[in-house]
Length: 481
Image 1 (cartoon, helix red, strand yellow):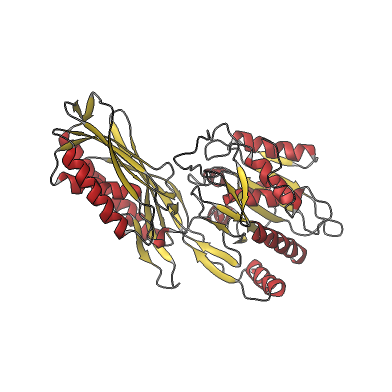
Image 2 (cartoon, rainbow, N blue to C red):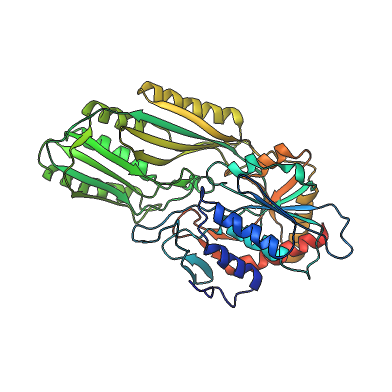
């Protein structure tokens, strides 16, 4: 695919590199190609670099004339993106480039996530490294991997090679907002092993689709429906009047994305006419309930091909009950920062394998004790139904630094450049800053970025004008620090 979709956009280098990396498959867990691209970029420009076993890449650049001996600044972002696509998209994420387009002042990827989170950080950093006419101190550019699936790259990286004590994380999605603290998190995987039995009746497929979805950190408070949880409600409702067993239930692909679609196959022991009527009533009721948050919600049913085996009735009922007992969404709000979610969890993935069903959660909290209490609760629910719960990929909260010089520089520069106050606040989503602060004693860091809307959904879009403004703002910051 030719590199011409973003030609003519300014700043030219930023958008050229954004388009180049959009041609490279870089979903979480598929980091070798994009990591290799960054290493080759450094080699071609004779820049010192390090590429580690986790595919993290660190690229070093000297300060510009007269600034060679200043303290380095770390520029940091992550290489991976969330792979989500609409049901009618034919893209193979592992091999195909993104199909970029410009739409009403935004860059989009047709039918898929865009990867502005965190591709814009990579594009900014590459443009900095490829420019010799910009004023800056020595740069230590850190590209981490697999941020979206547990911050594995940041956890594995050796920061002893870094001299900088100031870090600019470019992983914000709101122009004019400076993030200075974030929640910690943990993944929880629940596995329920089931018994199978022969199928003798009709098999139907129920689907929940058309939901808004979104980032489970920054958008969890909007109350968007979660397709996995909605399917649980539907199945529980059906079980009161219709005799059936589960065959499969599958929804979502990422634990940090609010699930947009879920598909469940069930085996009936009687005719399906009553089921069709029941689903149609539920579709109407749920569309009314979620009309303000998920106006395109759709619950559909169809007869499908027969199967030989289904999940036993006893295990089917346990799975449905367990699914409905799981908490999901906002658990508590911050008592000190108005409007900030303190604790939440998201049931991002439900999947059926040969002999078990799995539920994958991302739990977040700015209070470590609440996060632990939440994973303990999931463990207790799992054990109640005879399932196993594994908690892993824990990462710390990023604590607010009261004496941050970077916060002052960013806020003052924003007011000077744009004539208004910058919003300095915390975020419920997880950022890698907490891990870096734990590795580098005394690290002063902030997070900023341009406007990116609907991240982790196929509607994701990156503002062209905001990207240009935040680029000029970053250059001004580098002049001043």
